Amino acid sequence: MAYHAGVAIEQVPLREQAYSLGPAQYGTPVHQATEPLPVSAWIHTRTGHHLVMGVAVGWTPRAARIRYTDEHGREGYAWVWANAVTRR
Image (cartoon, one colour):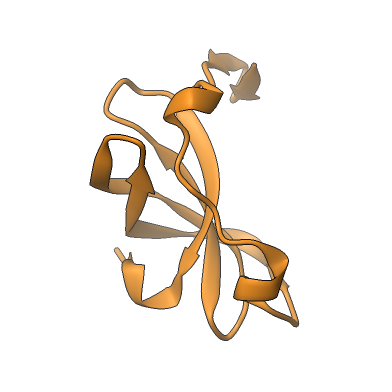
C-alpha cells in the first residue's frame, strides 16, 4: 500500500493494471521528473482503453512513465507511448 500525505492509497490489483511498455520499447535515456507533471493518459487494460488522470514521473523520447488513478481511486504505474499522454 502506498502513502501520500500520510493517507493510505490502495494499489490497482495486478489483474486490472495497465499494460506497460518494456525497456526495449520505451528506450533510453530515462529522465526522472524532479517534480511530477500533471497529465491525462490513455492506458490499455484487460477491459479496454481508458483515459486516466495522473502525473508523469519519468520519460524518454518515445514514452512516459505515469502514476495514475483508476476509476476506483486506486493508484497504478505504467510506461505508455508519448502520444498517449497530454499535459494538463
